[in-house]
Image (cartoon, rainbow, N blue to C red; front, side, top):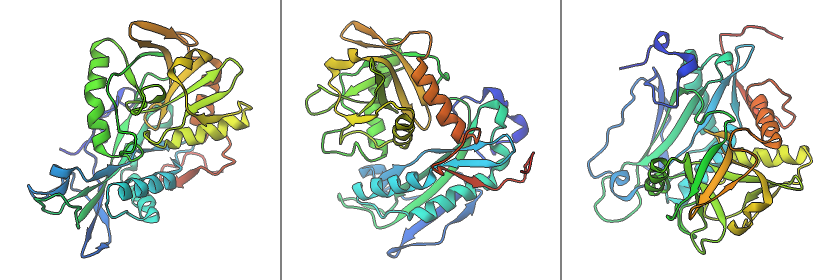
Length: 348
């Protein structure tokens, strides 16, 4: 049943699915992408032999629309999500959906569902999920020749509890292989991390950190977010690896950290050297920045800045990034794009 806006509690949304009035869909067939359009359907129909069901040809993205104080709507660097989806599709031998069409489809879905973009004061946002699946009927292992591209949206609150530090553990599993699909945003990587996250939750942790799949000596990423640390000398450091997802949030924070004099670097981080960090965090579209209060490995717990309070550098980066996304702070890099809204409260 379609969601009714009057039934939503903007201050207690959580991070859950709501069936909104409009989605977007386009088909690839006969060797080309067909024109896409908005649809009121929130289901997909394909063969029992569809490629995605048996051989996992699927890629997806996640981005948000933010309600500004003046009522207008912001998107944050959507073209980078489109570019990443192209790269993910190529890795999965899929036909990429064009970046300009990607951005346009996201804007159409946000505009069509603008009543469901949470109000500015709620701190919520509209989470947008574009994805693409192989729909050809296959039996033997081979790439699909037909694909469906679909975009839906859902209003969400915070994925994690704001700037409250959380406790993490280190997984014994690998999220992705060294030369595998770790740099693609594809469902299989997340499926392989589910058991690790489930065990972490059962043991009382927020989530788990994965080490590099080749030597298990270096920090890779969390189940759904990248890692960063702040050294005693105030340097922003984040892992460089070919088995982790290139994060748009991390890319943005590297720029902000440079502007704040944090001498940012993307490099291999030996797990044995984690004690060099006085602050640490998990970063991504959903989490934004979630402080890591502690990390436990083989019964030994390392505490970073505090288990109850976010560190000053983490807090400053969080406020700067969120301020740009919501339009409260200057955007000298022109990262945001406006989706025209009919709910303008204060025209400049």
